[in-house]
Length: 156
Image (cartoon, rainbow, N blue to C red):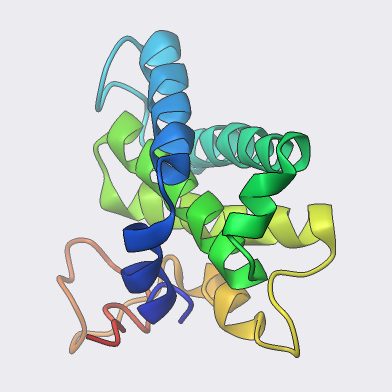
């Protein structure tokens, strides 16, 4: 999936932009729900938080073109927005599965807003996860958390 190498490498060179998006989301969630892990663990919360953070991030990319130059590939921007959305949803609810749902929703919102995630058809990897949010394969991951079919698929 798109969570792998792109995210592994992205955090090293995205400056303080990923931090800004994450702090915005976590501050938004803490103000609304009264702290970390206090939000209800529902898909509606994942949708609300991921939509808010993704919209904020896209607005920042549009307002400051130098960010677009720094994150020169669509997959980089998609991963930064998705990471911030997923981190916000996970911290707000205290549940990793809600964070994963926020991640994948961000990918879809990004594609809907800008028409594509990457270039030359490479955006498939970034949008193939939403159907796996509630999948279960006994040989992959912790069955209590019910992670996606390709998790962990890190190129490390």
